Length: 458
Image (tube, rainbow, N blue to C red):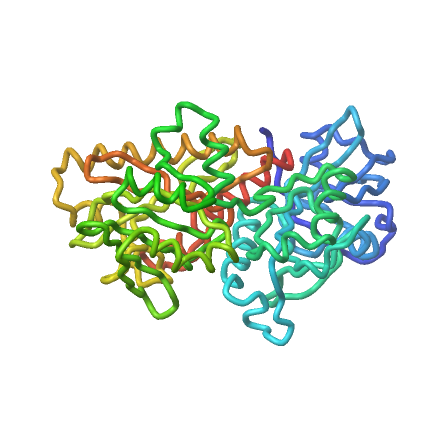
């Protein structure tokens, strides 16, 4: 797609610049065949304004009167993409990208968005690079039938709150189902899509049962799926225990490895349960499967769990290892793998989450610590990549929501077979931090901005 990047210059009233006149570089006007001294429509986000274009010999700039800039949410120095559609006589500048965030800490100038402030600054830097504006807003700023949004942006070395049109594209980074399911949030998203054709991606959280049921619809994905069901009763537990020596019970809306229970068959009729909790792992022994069920029955009544077969995972230095693939759409709107990292479980732990004492390393380094040949390791990397893309495409095909990035957790058993653990539609930005600490824009952040630009048709 042909792109032209322009710098926004906001200047006071002159003989040229009333609030309906903009000054565009001659070269850009000529390239896009923008008519001079005629009324056309200028669009930024959801807002449209009739303007008259005059040209000047300035280089790559669009000069706008302060009143007009304030009205449509532009600020001085912004670098934006521009295109002109002759059939609709519309000069579009943008894209305007909105990011839904969970909360704002108004008293904290350095970290107004808590742990994701650095990510938000990185998004701003990536938008500067690719020609876009990004703004950030929490649930309390989302309203039904909104024509604009009060949102935060970074410019001139600080964060400030401004009024913006409804964005071209919205990226949902709400980190709580409670926030996401608020009626005003749902209504805001529905209205933005219906009234302004706003593209919203990563619209919703995925739960474990939904993912497995969706992927089961595709025969080619069955090989990645461990036997797994929404837990219902003792009979299901008994049936699964007859087929698998290790079982897992996982909260279907859980994250960070919280609340996972491992049930392992021992000699005779005995079973051992391991529970993850804040302090680590708690172990409990039972004389029978019936006793296990009775001990868990209270917990199983208050929370829904996914019952899943246990896997005999490859290990690194004796500890179980799994893999997190970050799969994203980018500048062409196609799924691609941004990164795959290995997560090694901490000593005495059976889950690899960093919050549970796990450690992050490269896939190659983790496999080098496994007792397998180099040929086996190379084949595993290829299978992990194929599985990541197959599963992302399966989610897109079988779940009727828009996703632009997915964190896909995979395991490899000792035979080299790849298994799906879970899919996360709100992958933590911390989990994908490069293993070096250079302060630069991460590829994952660049992909988000490039995909947003693709969606907005800039």
